[in-house]
Image (cartoon, rainbow, N blue to C red):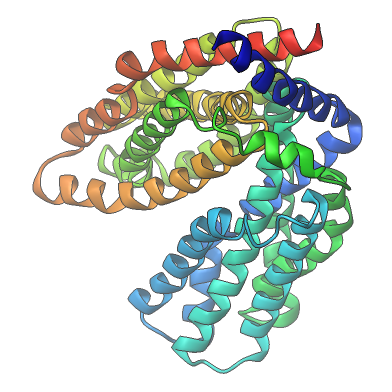
Length: 408
C-alpha cells in the first residue's frame, strides 16, 4: 500500500515543483503582483469617494449609495471564487487584463448612464467582478513562486503605492469631469496599468492545474487556515470600521486622525519590506502568528485608547501588523496549494468577513461600548490561533518537505 501511494504522489509533487520553478521570483512577476494587488483593492479603498460622488451627482440617499458599495464588494468576493472554473483556460495575466477591462467598462457606464438605481448597482457588479478577477489572478499567479511569502510581501507593499497614487488622481478627475470624475480616474488608471497585469503569467500548464486540484491541495490544514483567517478578518473589521469614531470620542484632533492614515500606509509599506526581507530566513509561522496577535492587540489598544498618544499607537501598530499578517496568510495558503485555490478562497472569505464585521461592530457600539468593541475584536482575531495553528504549521512543514523531496 505504501509503495502504491508513493507511485501516485511522487509525480504530482514533481509537477508542482516544476510549476514553481517555471514561475520564479523575478522582476516581472513582482511588478505584475504589485500592480494587481493595488488595482484589486481600488474598489474598497476608494469606496468613500465613490459613494460621495454618487450622492453629489445624483442626489440619492446614503442608504442607496451604500448599496452600491455592498454590490461592488459582494460581487468582488463572489467573482474571486465563481469565475475560477470559467476562466481556467486563460493565463493569469489575461484574466487580470480582462478584470481591468470590466472595471473600466463599469466605471465609464456610471459616468455616461442614467441616475437609475438598478443601473448603478449593475455597474457596481460589473466593476466588482473585475476587481475580483484581478484579485484571484494575483493570488494564483504569485502562489507558484519559489518564495511566495516574499512575493506577497512585496506585492502588498507595492500595492499601497498604487492605491496612494490613484487616490491622489481622484480630485483631479472631479475637477476636470465633475462629481463623477473619480470613476473616470479609476477607469483610466485601470487601463494604463493593464499591460503590467500581463506579467502575472503567460501560460498555465494543464498539468499544473491537475496537480493543484488533487486531493492534497485542500487538506485539513487548508480548512483550518481558512477558518482562522475568517475569524481574524471579522475581528479586525469589528474595531477598524469604527477607528475614526473612537478617535473623535476621546477628542483626538481631526488633523491627527487624517494624518495617521498617511503615516499608517507608509509604515505598512515598510512592514511589508521587512516581511519580504525575512521571508525564507525565518520560519513563516513566526511572522504569521506575530502579525495576527499583533493585529488583535492593536485593535484592543485602539478601542481602549484613553488619549491621543495611546490612540496613535494603536492605529500605527494596526497598520504594521495587519500588513505582515495579510502577506503571510497569502503565503501560507500558497504553500498549502500551489494552484492558488486556498489563497483565492481565503481572499474571498477575508472580504466577506470584513463586510460582516462592520455591522457586528455597530451592534456592539449601539448596545455596549468601545471597550466591549475592543474585547470582541481581539477575541475574534486570536481565538482560533491556539486551536488551528499547530495543525497549520504541521501542514506547512509537510508541504515544504514534499516539495523538497520532489527536488531531490
